[in-house]
Image 1 (cartoon, rainbow, N blue to C red):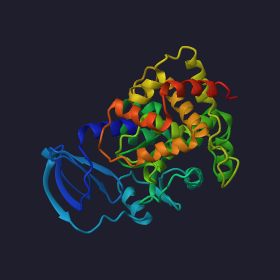
Image 2: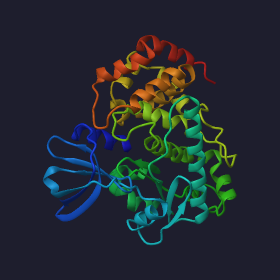
Image 3: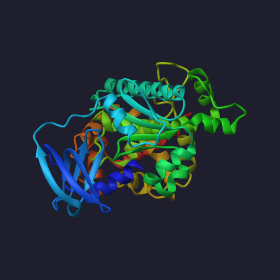
Image 4: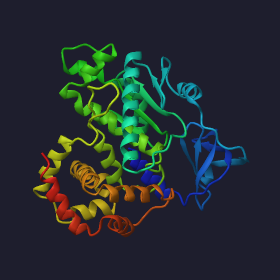
Length: 378
């Protein structure tokens, strides 16, 4: 979801331009609207992209604009209480707010489930920060609280998410939206109650026990995957509008999607072998083309087409796992180079390959070792 939006925006807009806060009046679908924010990108044809006080991105075409007024005051991101109140105004009645150190969780399910989600996100945030800091990568504080929307059931989630996901809504249980900078999901204990004899869980211990069941592993992994995207884009590891290769963005999210729910504070599953991805990659390896890695690195096509997408995701996980384990210093240097890229600039396939080989050497030689090392995983 988030990368599809990103690719569209990179195609539409030009180079990054720093600017003061602007108040833009515009007309969309016949209705007047106004947004205040800091300009992230200004296209040569007059199109704008702004980030507002909630951290949401707004794309406004030149022909939609009515007026612009610049304000020299710096943009102030909303604090948790203000942000929660602002988000509630956009949601149906019945939603409440649960806040943690780094998150604002708006929910209409049980308070216990919202608290469980907050605990999960905070543990992930702590593990993500510690992991990359120990490896020499700077992880910054997010400019404002991160938002998660947690719906009570799939039906209410669908009514909200269909406007953002379209026909894909029925196959996606959670997602990170690059534009709104929010995670959207629904209460997974209801899914488990449908699949087992147990009722919907009511307290933190019961929720943890329910979602620690083997059949729930993929559901929880999806939530963790999307939350990892959100952290990476808010803590300086990745830039929301930079041309970060999809294989890398997804590979990192998959690297963290192996949680251990047995601890209340730790996250011992970081970097554990992702069995689903490894099994998929081994099946793919039987007929894997010689240029598979070259194609994965040169553009994002394999991860944006329905055909073969599971193989592409599996190879992205396997490559990320290999590079972190076998080439950690080179991988961190590569991550820093990507994080330093300016938003709004689309790289060519050749430029992508050149940057990768600058850090890791010949793709052909690396591929041989990659396959050899991956074949040893148990």
